Length: 133
Image 1 (tube, one colour):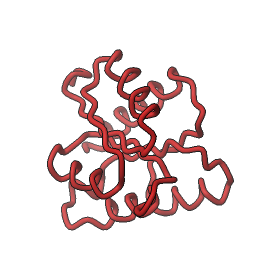
Image 2 (spheres, rainbow, N blue to C red):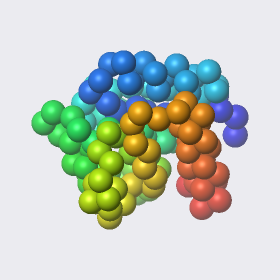
Image 3 (cartoon, rainbow, N blue to C red):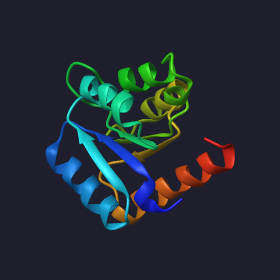
């Protein structure tokens, strides 16, 4: 599987962060789409069928925790097992624990180094391929 066939959906209410995520990951050859909120993000998950979801926690109306919960409880088994990388400024152990309890695959705290983002995405891809996802 080449990076060009890997579809990533970045859900974040901050346009600058969405642009950064798209820039860094497209430079690595990934196909990246973005969403500015959780409701649209969930809709895009159904429509675009991404291979990985990058998810902010602090968003208006529908938080990243809400989106993560909806993903993990979706009727569609392929949606339920999507790798989800939380990318957020929420750095307390309680926030990390809550994300992991809800089913986050991994967690990065903002600000982050672009190389760390690419490393985490590649880890999730390796994990998914190993598990047959």
